[in-house]
Image 1 (cartoon, rainbow, N blue to C red):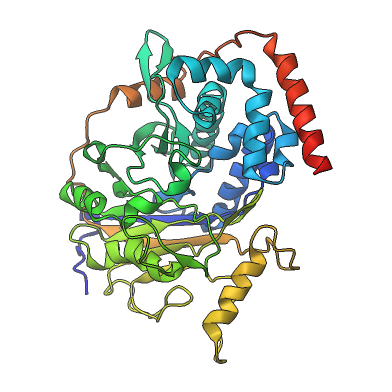
Image 2: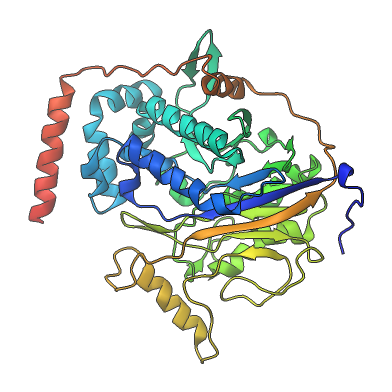
Length: 432
C-alpha cells in the first residue's frame, strides 16, 4: 500500500477529471461552434466537480487542430482529410502562399501558420474563459501552436515552427505552463499535418495544488526518455491528452519498431498505466481520449485514470487485455468482452463497424463520458520552473496585456483565382 501522510494539513487533496468527448467536423466551422463544443465538455464535468477541493480537468489531444476548418463549411463536408486540406489551401491561398514561399514550409504547414493568429487567439481565450467560469485547473488538451515572443504589446511568431502543444491554466485563467510533444506519429510528420517535434530537454514539471504536473502528449507517454525526464524533475501526476487515430480494437505498429504489431489496448498499457504502476515519483496518470469520425479519420479509445496497484487494487483493464490493478477509473468501451469463442475477433469487427466510412448502422456510435477520481499527494516539493519567452508571450495574451495581430492577405487578386480553382476541382471530383 502506498504510504499516505496522516496530517491533512501536510497533503494535497484534489479531484482529477478526464473528459472523453466526440468530435465532428461541424464543431469547428465557426468560433461559436468551437466554443459550444468546448463548453459541452466542461458541462459534462460540472456534476463531478468537487466543492471541497481543487479540481483538475484534462481535455484531449489536438482538440484545436480542426480549427483550420473555421469559416469554410464546404471543407467540413469534403469527405476526406486530403480533399479538405486542398480545398482549405485554395480558399486561403492569398495568405498561405506567401507563408509557404517566405518560410519554406509545406502547403499544409503554411496553411496552419497563415491561420494561426485567429485560431490561436480563439483557442486560448476559449480555454481561459472556461477555466475561469468553472474554477478549475485546466489541461486544455493540445493544439498546433506556433512559437511566439513578446515585443512591446505584440506577439511575434517565429517563422516555420508549429508544435503540438499542451497549455495548462489555473482557475483564474492564468497560464501555468506549456509542453510540446516530442515524439510525433507518422500522421503528425511531413506526410500528415506536418508539425515540429519538441525538444526533450524542454520538458518541465509544474507544481500546483493538483499535483506536480508533467505532460506526455499521446505517444510521448509511451517513451522512456520522456517519462524519465519528467520523473527526474519530480512529476507526481502525468497528463496524457490523446487522440488515437485508429479503431480501438485494430492492430498497432509504430516507431521505433513498426514490425511490433499488437492490439491497440495492449500497446496502451505501456503508457499511463505503466507510468503510474512502475514509476518512482509518478503516483497518478490521467489519459482522456477523444472519439468520433472526423471526415475520413477514425478516433477511438478508452479514457483512464491510473495509479499504483496499492491505490487501485480492483482488477480491470482495457478490452483485449487481462484485468489487473492500477485503474482508478476506466471508461467502458462500446462493447464489453463476452464469454463466447473468438471474442477478440468479434470486438475487432465492432471496431471496424464504428470506423469512418464503414457504412454499418453502428458507424460513429462511440461512447462518451467523464471519469473522476479523488487523489492525494504530499505537499509541494518541486520548484516552479522559470517561464520561457514563449510562455511570457502567451501569458500576456491571456491577461490582455498584448495582442496577436492578424496578418493581412497579400496579393488579394489571388482570392478570386483560388475560389475558381476550388470550384473547378470540386466539380471534377464529382464527375469522377
